[in-house]
Image (tube, rainbow over all chains, first blue to last red; front, side, top):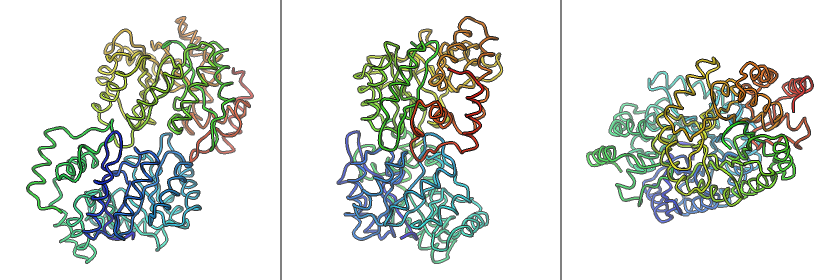
Length: 296
Length: 296
């Protein structure tokens, strides 16, 4: 389950609760499109903003709605004691894997993060994907740390934040990391603008936010790359270009949440306050992008 | 209550609970030393790592143990809905003020943070101190934003992260901010290494982590600065020099937690995992600093 397209849906929500029906529909839609796995409660799934109860309920809905497609559930939290409880909950809900980011408030050391993964993997009965996302966790993994963590039992994949945009540099980046980790551990690219380049550079998986909204489009990119047709993968990805500048400006969560609302997949903004919707002129721009493209 | 020495104690804790007796003793000790106010559940008070129930209980203990010394309680959380509940809890516990940092996972915009403060201050019946701490929140306030927020009702103080080490530059920094905010809003310096320089530069308050451990020493610095004796303030602060390099290397929380344990004010590390104690050689160094100095 740690290769191909892993689609990360939004968690539709308002200030009071999760919209369980909308979430179930989002997940079913991904499964029906044939994505290789579903990442529930990733950053775009707003895991960091939800209570334990809400996360538990979202994990169950994701597993129940995935129609057999493997589901990975985010278990990140500031405190190890909470991560351990969330791991239990995810496994009880039937998650096929868990995704763990070293969320921080006080700056963490490399050794503290190693020990976090060591402690958590000791209790797991499903595989774990390491979630390297310095933009939200403010923790920078060294490659040495990736190597140490990847050797822990249960570690099955690393979700890296991106690759260099130059194809040769991207390939060198992936090969450098690959040389430091067991062959059983896959590498997945995230940061959607780097998806095609990452897959073409040899990443096994694309952990994709935009794939949570447009699974057919992202599957076409992924399959092209898997068939070693780098040119077609890049060409398929080209049509998503309009999103990347909006992602950079407003963050992928705000943009994907607005698009989901426009596509009537969700009601309301799906953003937990203090996070607010993109401004009106950006909405118009996004509406324009959506109306021109035939995404799915 | 937003001038002079505001002392920020640790919240003594282990993986299961808060050590309520040790916390009560820490707070009483600050009150007995005559600090001007007490900041419970600041960053060093590990607010970000505690449940709502734990924070509610800590707020009550702080108020009950402060013997009339004004108590400010940290109400920061990732989600506005939680901040509002924590504000209610703090006020019910008898807090004299609240302290709010714009905690983030998804990067926040200036406008989102303004609206957070706007929404929270609308519900408050006690004053609020703006907590500007980019090292933990990863949010950078512009001076324009400080100006907008400081004009909201209930805003009484700004806790700034530090000042330039050059006294003239520090003074210019404080004056620049002062010119942009109402005269009723005080400015307090934090980042303990900048305490004396900040007070000498015209800050009204010192929001101090080390003051949560050595209130007498920090009161001597504060009173000297308040009496416009900059030289004596800097000289008093000089004896704390040994701490600043350790703070820079390990973060103030880990160092203060180790010192509190050595001084037998707490049992165990008081650090929430994944955060871990400073290494053994650093402990020896800290023990040496403590044994040489006559701090209190």
